[in-house]
Length: 76
Image (cartoon, rainbow, N blue to C red; front, side):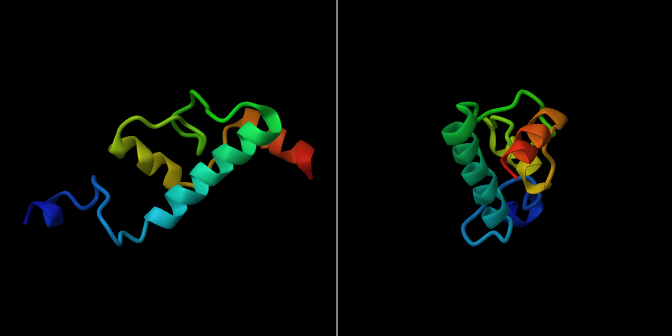
């Protein structure tokens, strides 16, 4: 019952949002490897360093802050 009540606020096994969150973590690894800068302090950026499960949901959006968008553009 609690899982259903809080399903928008927690991640559980088999959650369809997990692949998008993993994608954001892979992007962090790429930014670390290329730019030596994996995290962002902007909570709305996919590279935000989430410490709480609820903060992971910001990674679901395909948003990079302007700084990281420009860095990514340099790779193209």
